[in-house]
Image (cartoon, rainbow, N blue to C red; front, side):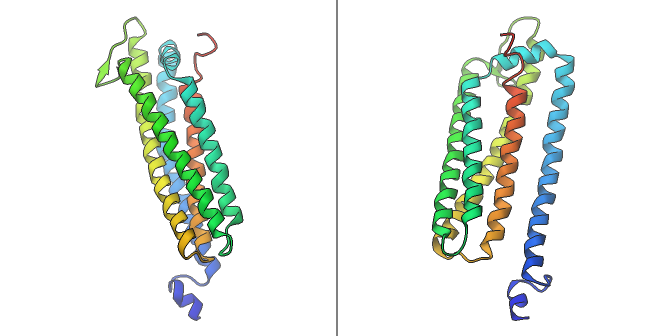
Length: 214
């Protein structure tokens, strides 16, 4: 009973608390799936209507940066999964270093995305700000870049939230980690992996169409 009171009266036991926390994260991820799912559905609807325009727009994205960012995120997910696997009060410092490495890779991802945005601005491909694209495919290309900037900006915001989570947990692991922090780490890892999976879908939708015929 003292252990139960130390956590919260609504939980019957420590496993009950941990399972509830994990369920809460899965529910949150489900709502995020609805958000990104709506964006992806809109993408397919407009891509069907402007097939050539979307292919042309895709050819104006930077495939090198997109591929590099994919590798960066996959590596960061590996580090986060490793941090969860090895975590214990005795090995928390290793988990802290792994989380720090994943957060740094996340920041590198944001920097590369910023460089890519800058290139697209220089090429006058930012709808509503400076979009100049001549030819019969202009409307389709503009719609493609509207989806591109909306989807990648929302994803980048999720990345920044994930980086804050990883950084906070890394600091906790360095100072006074306990066994109960494993649940928080596991929930943060689920979020980070979700952000990674979303990017894989965005990479396939944004960078790959039209490349084979370029």
